[in-house]
Length: 336
Image (tube, rainbow, N blue to C red):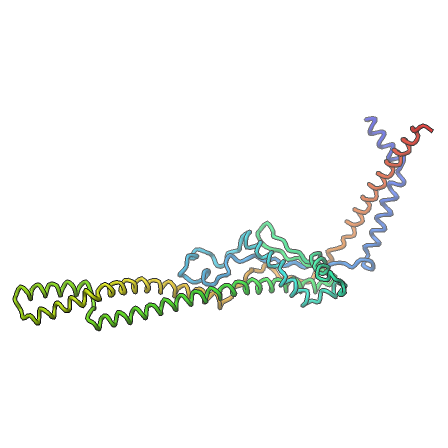
């Protein structure tokens, strides 16, 4: 056997009593300290949700859009999962949950403290956590001494998550609705004005500029060639003068009206889509399971506490013995 190994075994055997007694005492103390009478057990409830790919009803369901290939029932990806976590960490959910379940008193937070909100947030963060899983879902974990309360908080947070995200999206959709409605109304008003002006030009004799000009020019040439009455020729010339005077404006209005009609169709389609987004709410999440009251405590794990305490006591005792022996040897080497 290696001499160093023999030395180590000899050292451990020499100090076997403190190395065995210290971990045993630490384990017993830890076991007693982790009893329910000294430490309140914590129960865990978990809700697993998947983010939706899209929360826009018009994009998901209506045909006149560029998202026709999106699957309405498809689960979201990493970006959507991170968005859900950011919403779960928002003040609105924190304030709503703490007020609804009176967590200030439940967590025994000092209400007279100047750092009340910070203290409450620290307790809240210790008991409630969120994490994205490898499958791009989001887990809401709630620990509490009351298993029913833990389940209620987890389910309430899931409901709030849907409401908060839907409220944000609907508020933006309402702003978009006002913008699109304004542009649609403006386009319709411009079209009415152009149609009224075209009606006025038609009353003056301008009905279809290109065709009229060609026909009247041919009739004038024929009338002159045939030597008709000057009054008939003058009437044709007056008609051509009217076409020359108002024809340019007529063509401009006609072409502009055609473009506005195409724009009006696009705006009407967009208006229908935005109106649906502002009025209809789709769930922001797809819940895998609802939280249930746990029938077994999550913390403390007594065997783990005892094992860790015993190991820590063994290492501490071993280091103490090594330091003591080293100090003793150095003291013996110093000159008296």
